[in-house]
Image 1: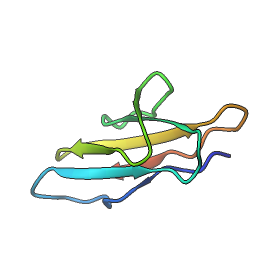
Image 2 (image 1 turned 90 degrees about the vertical axis):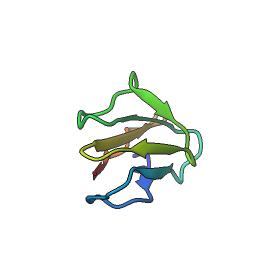
Image 3 (image 1 turned 30 degrees about the vertical axis):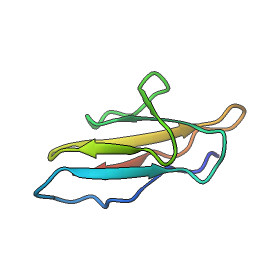
Image 4 (image 1 turned 135 degrees about the vertical axis):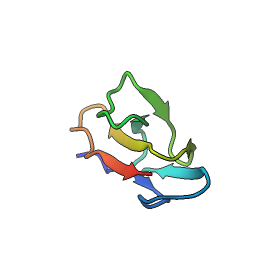
Length: 80
């Protein structure tokens, strides 16, 4: 399977918006995310490893990775 993406900010309640860095240890992956809590697909917004997402309160971020010829990653989930 493709490696599950990692996010550097833990789930939780924050009093200011957070900048979350998304990483994946595998080269050549395509990562896509949602901020509505729905499962991401390859049609959702793409994000590159090392990029960041600005999150606001009451958002559930889900990120999944794909690579040609391999099963997709598990979904990384953070609840802010």
